[in-house]
Length: 149
Image (tube, rainbow, N blue to C red; front, top):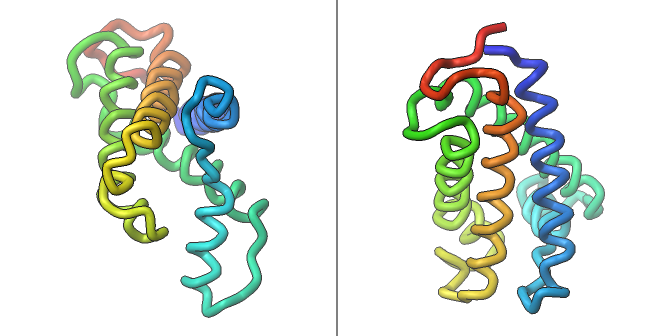
């Protein structure tokens, strides 16, 4: 595993997916306030300390990097397809995990209470996130072979 390469891929992919989520309202999809959701959750989890959305965005970026490290360590070469397809599959897994764990924790309910536009926006963002990680981390590696350091 190349941790540096994975961390950079996670940072870029998280930034791109976040930018996409900020643009999605122009396409008629709802606004995903990830930073605000995370900061609200953190405020409850840290005994009511005032935590601003910027802290939520920082946590969002750190989680994106951590997820890219997980991808690099345990996923590369274990999913079908080339690097981009493996990344998209991984992003869809992250989407499912977020919908059944994180969304209920912030009061949005399992699978965002069935809000189809919200689900669509989240799925698109997580798919882009995963696809970019696959592309950036595995760009010069043949399908099925994990990258080396």
